[in-house]
Image 1 (tube, rainbow, N blue to C red):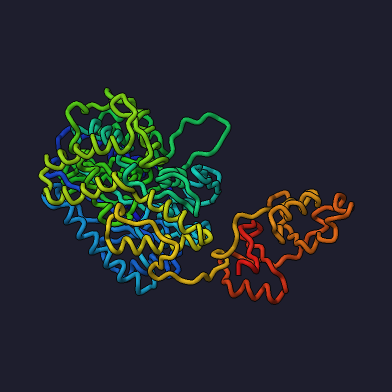
Image 2: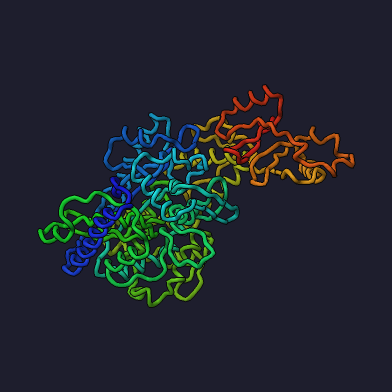
Length: 618
């Protein structure tokens, strides 16, 4: 759950206290490793469930804090935004029916959350990226009002000294700038935890890295952001850039992103791994340290919390993160798998968790010391191939290039069965959850279902309406509980649960807009309007801000005359504009049109044109 009471690390005194604690924590970690103090048996698993909250119109909610207060259950906690919450599941020993036990607890907690959410006219959505997210919901007004998030956002901006940039290319493209870390709130994941043996740390961690690509490919369900088709698991690109402290520069810069896959195989001890993280990533926040330091606690026989080390580790986000914790008074180490997305159902998530744990525990003897058998760059390439292409990826494995389905069915799935048998996981559970994985391999994952469904909806609806219907269908299908391999593509005539009529301007406006510049040739602009059968053309200034609107009546009399070649758009366009924002109600826009006897309204955010609403749209 992380440390929620933090403060800026911006004075010499604060840094002095913090780094003394951090170095002491590292010494204590090394001492506990040498002393063999770490818990090795029984092995435990755990998970964190992030989820989205939407209102009755399937848009991101702002009710997370109020809903959390009403739930009043310690397994729930806040996330970065007012439309995200998180559930921390109880860790369980890895044996018997642990996976179905975890599944029951997850369902019970989500049922509780949904029951309370409905009192606020909200719904819980399990998905990697909420389809209806838009730039409107990335404002700091939607940041959860806890100091931790504001302090972290300010610290990242202070290090970066520039706005954050988001640029992702896929079938479509998104290119945005923002002044806070709110992009991170677009992501929701199902974070899996597996306890490991510190004596086998490097080999185990490297194996987790090596299998990440193939595991991710079958879990992918986040192919879109703001109505654009991007990567099959767009979260990988989105989260990487959302907390990036690096600046774009013409200088060659070797620093790593805080979210990343790494640059080489792990080596040495767990303490060596954390030391490299401290060297590579600047500490951003601190907290109020009380009581004895870690070495003093060890001398008294108390297992230390290593609070400074955990605080630093909580601001670095490798896709496989090494974590320190305490179980029943004894220290343990675990790998946190951060790349698996939330949803689309709890059955899919538990199946993903089991598949990953099974492959981790089923590593064949010949694949020990993976760093001698596989080039790290191939493992990293596999990971990003999976993020981009999902089930259509091909992987470098054992000296060959193998299609995803072949590698999963012939190598990874049998390995998972063997690994789970080794740790005595209940056979019925194994058949149930790995059966979900096998059916998904042979049919579709969440990303494939979402793309096909969205394309179908776009045949009849504009993007905002199609995205809202897609979100409603995600809720409907998830609530029924059938895994995503059984989901049928959405039909345009399907009526989703709670689907509401269009109410906002942003739901009706046209976003693919043809525009012209003030200094453009009037003759060319008239031809543009004729070629595209449009009657209203927004005009932009040199800063690409809306400065006017040209209607067909403004140029109709000039179109056949010589004067059109000597006319400037600036002199012909209307500059005293009536505009509206995308969040305005449709009734308000209709009234503006009627009052001013106009047939179109430019839709703006500030001075930036984001769409146009015409009488035809209404």
